[in-house]
Image 1 (cartoon, rainbow, N blue to C red):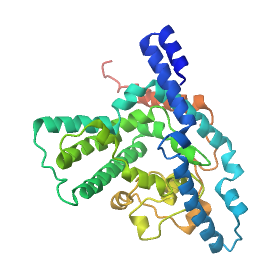
Image 2: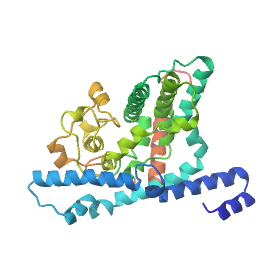
Image 3: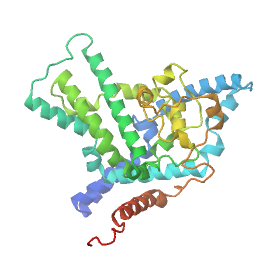
Image 4: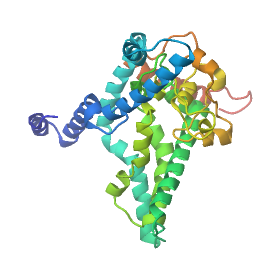
Length: 351
């Protein structure tokens, strides 16, 4: 936000209110400049790397399907109007911008429920109680740490994502993310505002606490800046076509690697309307957790040609406007709670 506007808000409003409005404004500004001034998945560099993976998919399947391919054809394939100008895509934009403002207002809570916060608290507690064994010694110590940390954080993601699908109360919030009938990279951010709280309670508390333990075992006491800098795995993930996960572009890693790593095609299956695909392919980076626990569905040619997205097949996207996306899940959760606690007691039972 401009400094003059910040100074004005500070001069006319209570400190808590001006801080909340400034955080909301800064968050909205970050959302509008996300492709250039952030390291998120929507950074222009990651969008371009995803486009290169999309080019590979375009050429491969054009040859496989005996179709002509060209530069013009590729750009039509990459950003078809029926997807990027659809009502579902516009709903993604509205929810993305709305969430940016809300999360700006809730910045303190968002920071409190971040993985870095849980990691710092756990690391500080262990460091004040015991002496670290310092396992980073030797030429392979840090590589081992990075590998273990990636495994732990990815498993935490799998657990939290599975919970979101298995528990009806959590599903009402997560269903907003599964509602698009057409998907674009911005569909990643189609989430209910409470989703980051639920995510913080489950995934970030687990992954952050385990990160804190690993940091203690390998490095001893570390500061918050060191924790925030642990992003190499995330960089590789975003570079490797991660934006295609929420798209119409089919890309997978081949039969063997499909059992080890989650591809864009895996995640598109995860968004399928078919009942047999509900709660499948819950991993983020590694497919081994889905393989181990029986939730892995491998990409096939039949799925490539017949996959549809959304909550229910042949029904419209239920969350096309901001109010419905925010309010309906809360109404459903209230009805579930009311139904649970207002059941009639057996006759003769005292009230």
